[in-house]
Amino acid sequence: MCELNAYLSAGEKEDLYLESVDIIRPENGGVYMRSLFGEERFFQGRIKEIQAIKRKILLEPICPPDL
Image (cartoon, rainbow, N blue to C red):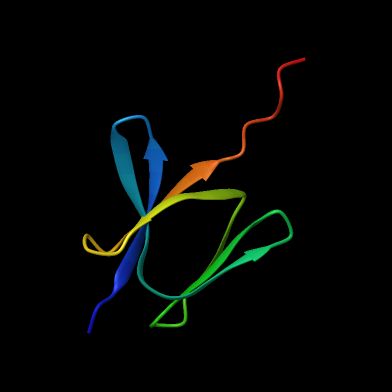
């Protein structure tokens, strides 16, 4: 089975956010995810990139505009 893992991307650093992602969809200005194990998360940001071969979803936060 090919499972995708979601990571928070900050420059060169990537931190694991959710393992074994089953469902991912845009929702309310962010990203809803559910794992194969039923764990649900909502990330206030966007998908930066999906790397299918590496089985990665890279997420990045939405930065508020500078005032």
